[in-house]
Amino acid sequence: MKEDTKIIHGGGKTGKAHGIVNTPVYRASTIVFPDTEEMIKASDGALKQKKKVLFYGRKGTPTTWTLEEAITLLEQGHDTVLSPSGLSAVTTALLAFLKTGDHLLMTDSVYEPTRHFCEGTLARFGVETTYYDPLVGSGIADLMQRNTTVIFTESPGSHTFEVQDLPAISEAAHAGGAVVLIDNTWASPLFHKPLTLGADVSIHACTKYIVGHSDALMGSMTAVEQHFGQLYEARQQLGVAVGPDDAYLATRGLRTMGVRLRQHQESTMEIVRWLQKRSEVKRVLYPALEDDPGHAIWRRDFLGASGLFGVVLNETSEEAVTAMIDGMQLFSLGYSWGGFESLICSSTPKRVRTATDWSEPEPGLRIHIGLEDPEDLLADLEAGLDRFNAVLKGL
Ligand SMILES: Cc1ncc(COP(=O)(O)O)c(C=O)c1O
Image 1 (spheres, rainbow, N blue to C red):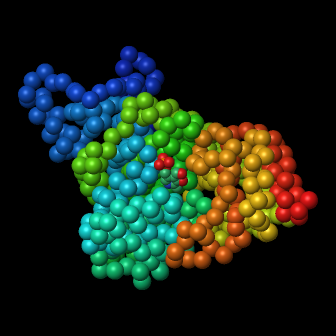
Image 2 (tube, rainbow, N blue to C red; image 1 turned 90 degrees about the horizontal axis):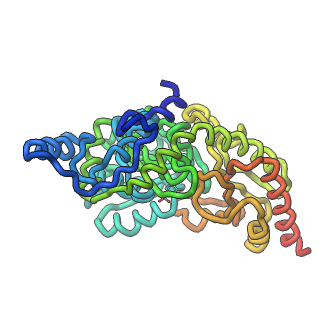
Image 3 (spheres, rainbow, N blue to C red; image 1 turned 180 degrees about the horizontal axis):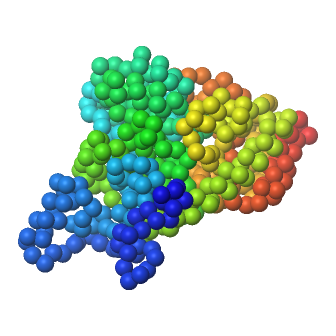
């Protein structure tokens, strides 16, 4: 099946009833059984064999399985489990593979709340985290310790957009007995297939491109066969479950993700090329650009680029960036991304880095290009840069 067909048909047979196209919203806590034998059979399937059988609402229903199956198909993994947010997918996956006394290698470009989890909960439970340069590649082998059990990657990072050499990192990790987790949110399961490049678990904040409409939170973890059992068990033990309405919305979003993403990509390319020519702009951080430092690896490992990028400004100030952002007509000020709308916020990665220097002028910008007409977005950005310049030059 081609990728666009997988997006439409993945999981589509699960829970189909009465010829209705979409799997309905099954609301369930208790599942009742006709007799003890059936109950034991269901318990065996859900708990021991880790199968998608109706046993208890928390273990899933056809509504959640439809989404899990579709993501598994796109990720080319063994199976997927869902969680109620992207961050809970990250934390559940980390807890699945770490124990007291372990050492975790974490990319320095990671989404900030993931870092907080390492410094808070994981540190409290005796897991030591070392942050590494996202561009380390096979050099990661030198950072591995006897007790390194997990290497966490995020490629590209969602503020600084370094592309990681996943095959090289995975090879070194596996040689040292560690598993590789990746936050694959930026590319979506359509544009990057980390499980085919050596990663063991691919994580999504489905909240972004899969949901696609900024109206639900959802996370997913897809694993290769060897590691799925451990992930499934952690999800069970932690009581991680998702609401059926949100699973329905995420599946509904997924069905149009292909066309949305291609439009995000096309519009973003037009806008980043325009920004590159502006005198205010020092660098645009977007791996699909030929002169981006991550371009070669992006070309080798990715199938496309999404709508999120960074802008490094030549000369900047907080006041000037605030004047730009606060007067935008179409770009809204807000975190998150991946919905149909354009967003802008200031970006200050230096503040959180610990292993590597981010020596670019700050604040910069982080922009998400939505599905509006790019001409309108360019006009909004141009007016924004006028306000930026006026403040910078003290006019
Ligand atoms: C790269 C990345 N991973 C994970 C998350 C967390 O997702 P959620 O907001 O669904 O918890 C985000 C949210 O912004 C993100 O940007």
